[in-house]
Image 1: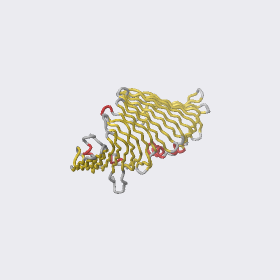
Image 2: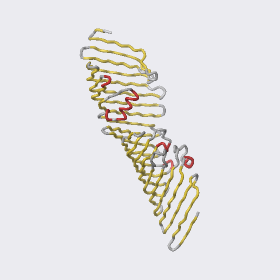
Image 3: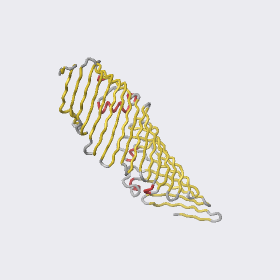
Length: 362
């Protein structure tokens, strides 16, 4: 510590090089009349240094921090800069900056504008897939231990995973002693998805989601997932999806519905003018039950029109019973029933009946 003091007018300044907890700190401070200015550099902020303050923190690569604070106590202007090292020789350096005000009272009150640029998520243990995140946020509230209240409003920019751009996202997070509330909107082209989440000890976790896909074929991520995971290629059309779910203790109650329109699957020679799906999943986590129905009209399969189609699934989620009915314009009808074994990816106890008018033909 190196300190100096003068009076008339009051002026004090000094330097400090040492440790605060596990952190190395280089600091310089100055007091002149009623104004205070402090600059601090933290040459290494790593997993070991953060462990006493943030047990189990996900950081895997240390970074450098520089903080500036100035003002008339208890109100200060603050500026924070963190610089991350290159995760690989070819990657860019990422950084997070923050500027705003801090009211050094009990409780501590903050209002910060935060910006992240090219932050590689692998720095925080984000797996082996390279992901770079950029965005901005405003963080405001009071820090008071168990009585902390925070509001975070954020939006992302020019982010990517494994070289592919991520859709833009914007939302808010509210934290208070009794609950956590979050709302996020994701956009990609004409596609929009909204997700709302709320958690409270007294009510458990609640989630609501809504998505609009005017042209699903224009969403590269969805098109790739359908092809790679389900072997579905060339699917076109639009739709609307909605889901709500609540978890309280071991119990779950969720319902969902979807509308599809002008769907075409050329590789299967199938098209559907309109389809509707709705369902519900309820019960304790170890014994969930499913009840869902699907219906469609204006269906053409291999140039053969199907005027009506209905599908239902009901029973334990582990082995629901499926029932299907299809009819065409010539009076032919197909009825089928089977038990689905999702884990084995197979149908069991299959029964099929084909009829024409009042006559069963197979």
